Image (tube, rainbow, N blue to C red; front, side, top):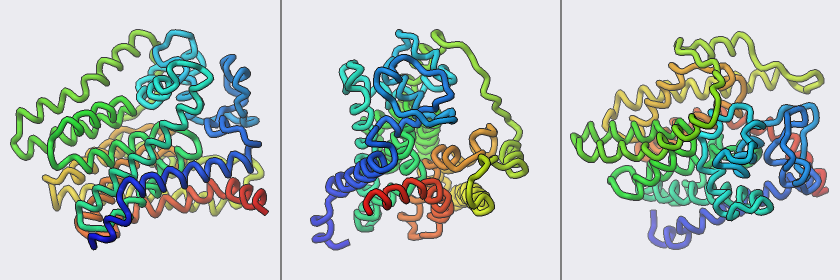
Length: 386
């Protein structure tokens, strides 16, 4: 990469550009498709039990729909410490409240004021996008590529999904990019990244385990023990949630591939009247094949480079995907696409380091189905512009 190019496209500028592009798309789809009501991005379902704040905030409701996960993280942002009873409107409070970082940051930025929660939540999301691109650009520049290649972060499945539904996975994707950027050298920044990842989603704990395993491979036993403590804030928080919520089993199976095979035989049932269902089903299978291909690449990468941090991390996510089986994780691309975005980011990191672009194929196989999901919104924006 030429020095002039690096100066022309510094990482921070690319990060700002990415955040502007995402918020511009959100503004366009909200204006064209949801009457300018930004709360539509939470995807709140009309058939769900809803707290009074839904009426007071005039939240956009999707008719005849249970909604999506973003609605619950919105409620949590209004009541992060389980004090006002909003947890009774969350589908599984113990499960959702563990993922506290994004809602808590929104609550903190809003200074706890309910009327500021929504813009603060959107700001946290945009910061996740900007920081994720910034760290991705820094990483690819370290490999000798142009920093602009870091914009491929926007093509990781969790990003368009989070832009559409305001789920917390964009935060974990950004922290995974930071993990890969800072990973070569143990530092307080990396410790903070790992602590935040574990508080963003339970799968963030795999980043902690991956880094400790990486240090053990290098025989840095004391440092490994120190970084294991980065999981402590999450463990303490999980304990707090445990004492204030009741258990609701999620139906997890430990039979390898059981949920995946079930979904292959019993695919997602589309509502009556959905157009192009055979094409959608083909795209579903293609996206699912992309994730399974990613698992295969993860095992192959680890076999070739067992001491490399991206390889270790990808392996742990692949083992989780094959061993811990929950049917709802595999029913549609909005579920498995965002859950395994950290694995896809690790494969992208290996692609940059080793100049093996085919390692991006798993992410590329998921994108067509995401594009189909967003097509009605895109057409709505086109009609509005015309």
